[in-house]
Amino acid sequence: METIEREGGDRTMDSGGWDSGPPPGTDLGAPPEAGPAPLPYEGVWRFTAPAADASVPQARHAVRDLLVRQRVPVSDDLVQGLLLIVSELATNAVKHAAVLSPLLTVEVAVGAEWVRVSVEDNHPYRPTVLETDHGQTGGRGLLLVREVTREAGGVCDVEQTANGGKVVWSALPLRPPMVPRPQGPRR
Image (tube, helix red, strand yellow):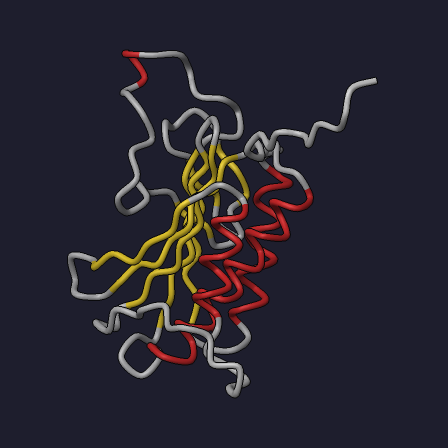
């Protein structure tokens, strides 16, 4: 196992294959000298694995273990949503990109009020979310990612990388959006 420094260089952790680096397209905030110190759970971690079926549960377990180890304040529902998103994105990379991209990278970026998971591969094809075809048994992964993200009050997207590949990501708030309670008749 390798030991790495988390972004900011103030702590080390047993990475289990994770390394630090900035998340694609995500601003972690102002430089340290311009604002308050980061919270203990803030940082960016990356896990690179072969684009193979066995990597999907490994990625899911690595994300879950990271959230626990860093004591990220996430609800059980949010954890389940994040793990489902990671599973779907990693599965897509394995099924659709492995021919041109033998490795996939899972990244977890945690800010003070959000968590972002992404899966990157080197395949140039940019997936699109298709309408549900109830006659198909597969092909609904990105629809599921979009719905889970939306229900949690987050956003998701696909971006091209500098090397011609892509990164598919989902960012979710750490605290669920406030939903007004239905008000009944007053007595």
